Image 1 (cartoon, rainbow, N blue to C red):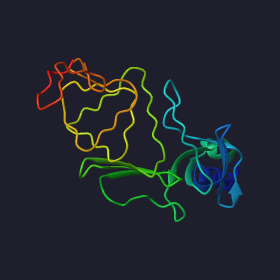
Image 2: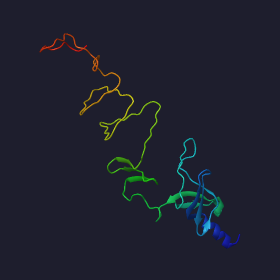
Image 3: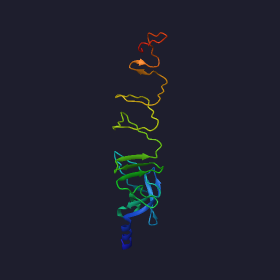
Image 4: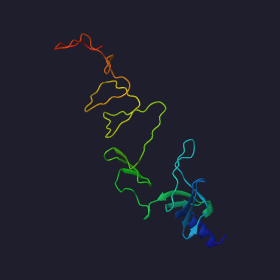
Length: 194
């Protein structure tokens, strides 16, 4: 091996480049680095065992590659780097943010212990047994729809309530169809509801 070949392999051990193509079905990408375009190479993931993560690269993303033996054909994309095209979503210490391409974002601010998710259209949570919200207060600012409701420790309601269909029962008395005994026209009061 001559010195030029040795230098080439040494220079290729670690390279910075830009993703130019992504094959999502094969989990591979191609990268331009130093005027060269790699073949289809793999990228590192957070987990790929019993637990798996899927977070594909995007075209234009700047990456750091490691090439075993200095051969770019065996390179692996190790991690991503901020760039002029894709800068950091925040520069505030102790604020951890993920921005998504549709404008949605999730942020945890450790300064105020606040988690914020915004810009999403739908949130779907499926649980086979239960979901627990363990907090002193749950605030819903818009319409809340539920198929069944069980209130176990009392509460209060304000504003108009409209009930249609079925029966409304209070302490064993059906409110919309109960009867009163001892009814006689005039100023007398009725007996209690039945």
